[in-house]
Image (cartoon, rainbow, N blue to C red):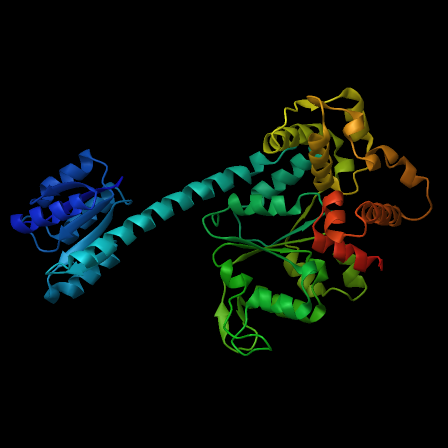
Length: 451
């Protein structure tokens, strides 16, 4: 086993016995009868775990523990103690000891204790690496952008990341609202804690309340056990509430209370559960208009809108299209085992002039489809989906009557109809063609009253 254990015991028979036992288990073992010498050994060698006696001449186990932790807080320490010194050993745990075991030593118990300690150490290390990778992946530096519009957005987001302020991210579907939310989390002091997301458009009111706050056993039919919600899962971290504009008014009241009082009640319970989460909300709807129409609470809106971040649609930041395409091609070609290195001039001209109603998500979907169908090492116009050729710019949309929003929605409906026709009415396949989730497609069908 790739772990080093340092055994410190002033009784030499016991020392040799423990060292021999651990070597048989496959560990690398260092041993010393002197705590002062053991401290020198820990300085000179990479030690994962120290097993030390509590009472020793020259230096107690607690003093050795404190010296080790000052040297390297990552060294775990297990205290060996006589039965009568258990209280002292527990005090040592408050100072940083990982566990204690009483004498005479039960070797079977010691084996399990060491295995659990080292496995936990490995998991903590792996988790730290994973979080570092996530931080790098979802950092602001990892967001592909060359436009001045996005530079301003990232500047604001970077300044607010370290705060506890609630953030409201607005923008059309597919602009990357969740990506910004993750960058806020992984650039904040909460980055070691969970990032939990919930999509309000995908759940009914009753399910959403239970999903957010959890429920007690027997709270409703089918609640056969207690269940913790997203607030508890995100404790200490960030809760990303996506499609916040879909939250019913009755549930908005409860969320407002959570933001004000920093506590909530599980469904079926009157017990207040304290919470320490940062709220980042997102929507593609006009919440100010909804407030005027009485469809969204004004007090809840202002609680969410402490810091507002509006992500512009891709058609308003066309400088980002080419760098995004380059990144997508590199990743998707590797994932699909294809040798694709770029886009032809004609294909790039078509992509640059396209309206992109689905924004960055649609762009990624188009590049993925093109990479899969591509027969050469570059994507040509023939590899692009038909819809990209049919409406190369917003010019066609502006020629129609109606407001800009009405024109966009009309075009969105036509895209959905075309996708459903191509997919033979299969919603899962149609959603894939559109580059959106199936739940989001069902939401759009309901929004537009389409069957």
